[in-house]
Image (tube, rainbow, N blue to C red; front, side):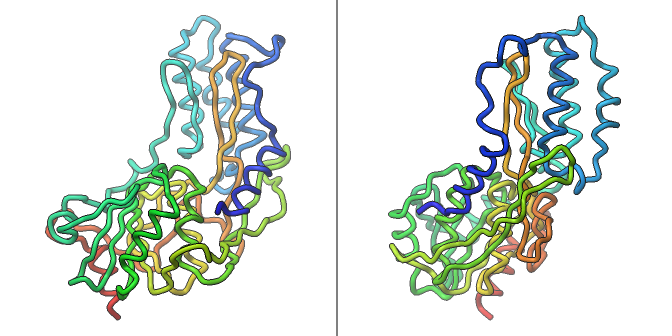
Length: 336
């Protein structure tokens, strides 16, 4: 069952920007470096959703990179200039795609890692099971369920969730580990999270850029997680482990947990990526995408782009890999 919120999100984005044409009209097609520079700058100026929040002066950025454009520059040189301009937005949902390269900001490199798979395998999850995209098993002498979901690109099925949650129905609590989960398919978010609630719950709001001004947005639209009644639901205490590597869909997921008293976030602030992207094509045929929405919490506050803070902040100690301090804290929390 896909959440109506995400269907609305995509419908909203498409209604404001349309499906960008795969082929540009002949009078727009151009390999001239300046034409492509100006086109990309204008598109970002009209669509990007975080200029004000990040205090980015896009006009200053234009002047900074405009001087590097020349008629005789190579495609590789043009790509480097356009990529450098886009990286000023500090957003992994902002990308430029060419036949020979892809521009990526790599936000996670700004912070230390907080997850080591070998520590889990050697000292906690000694007999793991694998179901679909999930790695899971009993920990803490069988009292607690540990579920590792490493990427939202991994398919989530009703059958897989029924199998996993049935297995741990008698546990005291459940740990869902999404550290170093860089995101993926946002439709997997409600498929998982709705298994932890017995009632329809208002969880967030979304706004979409819709005007020439950097502050022009639609009115906030509510997002509800629906009551799940088609399979197994786990309504006991849940801890979600997150860190700076929890980006995009993982940040969405983490923010939505704030609406539930029985779900707690433990670890580090997520990596961000709170805006959904929309893209198009440059006159030379290269493609791009920008964040065009913002995700707001129940108080209409916007912190998803810079990262969702945990309820309990815990740092991973890389000097002693026989322990996972973040996981240890989750176990203690579930045994209270």
